[in-house]
Length: 271
Image 1 (cartoon, helix red, strand yellow):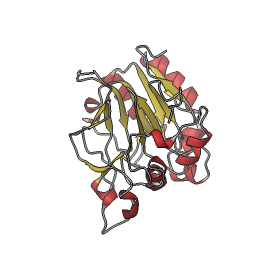
Image 2 (tube, rainbow, N blue to C red):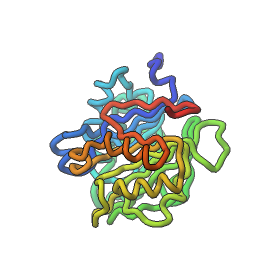
Image 3 (spheres, rainbow, N blue to C red):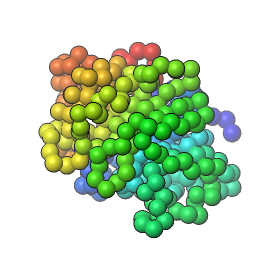
Image 4 (cartoon, one colour):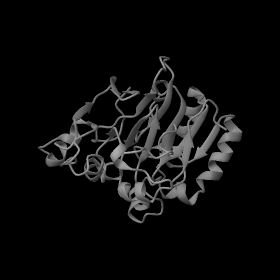
């Protein structure tokens, strides 16, 4: 099958930017996760509700059958609801067994919630368990889950991602999934592009990052580009694009508030 020209580029595609339960339930922002194409390898991260639909509606269209793998950072529904259907889509319903699925152990716990169905597991080439400080290789992409996040009773990890040929400690992309902020967090996500799940403008008791936390991460990491996504109701009402503009002026680092369907082409510069 000939690859879509869009897929051949290095890019990050935000299939959805919804975070909290109300935003997801009312679809005030789409939910669907992130598609990453890097060094010819195609990965899907956190396929939440509507992921398959948003792949189909994407312009250009994203074809799940060219996926090399799927990464699930944790088992909550806004990240995992479409994991099974995307595994089926990637493998043409099991007719073309392929791909690797990466997930925390509790997403595969047969004694608890069946996040990934047993019958679908047979459709992929391999299941790999995410653990703290563990590195994985898939195609031309290397990634690491540097530290276990503080996100209640759900085992949660962020990602440090390197493209082919990058041997440096600083990664090309960091994805900071759901977590409470803690002092050591920024040092684990040293990357050129940092994607952060930002639920609220102000800090709260919720186990999620806020804009204030994002500022602290940016100050310490100094990325070339910072992207906020996974917005709760307060962020949606607060006009995140304006918040991002203010942060850019304050911090001297380009900060972007992701939009549903937004693509970011990965180049040497990040204007």
